[in-house]
Image 1: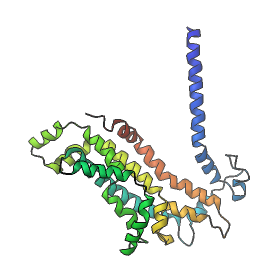
Image 2 (image 1 turned 30 degrees about the vertical axis):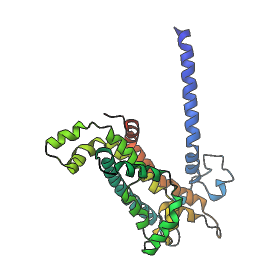
Image 3 (image 1 turned 45 degrees about the vertical axis):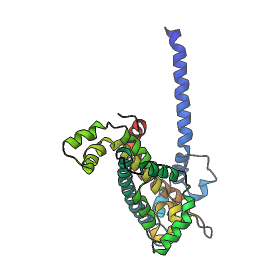
Image 4 (image 1 turned 90 degrees about the horizontal axis):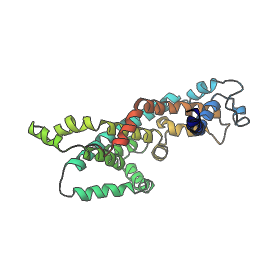
Amino acid sequence: MGMLNRPAAIRAVVYHLFVWITAFLMLYPLLWLLSSSLKDNSEIFTHAHQLTPSFIKFENYVTGWQGFGGIKFSTYFLNSLIITVCATVGCVISSTLVAYGFGRIRFAGSRFLFVCMLITMMLPGQVLIIPQYIFFQKIGWVNTFLPLIVPSLFGLPFLIFMIMQFVRGLPNELDESAKIDGCGRYAIFYRIIVPLVTPAVISATIFKFYWVWDDFFGPLIYLNRPRLYPVSLALKFFADPQQKTDWGAMFAMSILSLVPVFAVFLAFQKYIVEGISTTGLKG
């Protein structure tokens, strides 16, 4: 029996060794960033290969939190929070409503509108930047959060498609039973559909949260006042080409900017897996 189990034991050791090595390679950039945030500027690049600093410099976090130009980094975190929460909540609500319409309601032109929505998924976002900027500039929305929030209030094609597939997987008998009980379209949506598609909705919320929190291009285009910068844009301005760059402070704030991302992932990771694995498969 020992000889028979030996090949299985060797395979298990090789498999776990491979997993640990792969995990280390994937986590190495984050470990390097964390290590660099605790190093002195003179040590960050001269001893870049070392993950353990010669001495721990927590002052990088204090200096980074002071921000620049008299604006503390807490202001940038608040800006990111406002933009991300408003855009995410509005996008998920509207996307769920549209997904319910496409998935459950048959109306004239529904197929045509659905195809149009799919086509917009193939359109690069960069193509829309110039006309959108001209439009927002004409109505006086530049240097406000509105260009970063309002477009999200009308849904996102990818999220609509993902939630719609989940809605279509639900039995139609649920709607018919609710109609017999006197429920209308909105009652069916809020009382029947939304509770059953919660995993997909939470997955959509997480995706949108990540995309908005990490967005750099949008704030760079529409925001010119430093007090309005989100975290993604504020980090870039730690690197000043005319002065000495405080790399330690920049890396320290980069670590803090990842805290909300990790917190959201750890809190809702089971919903990500469930929402993706069951999309379009329930019935």
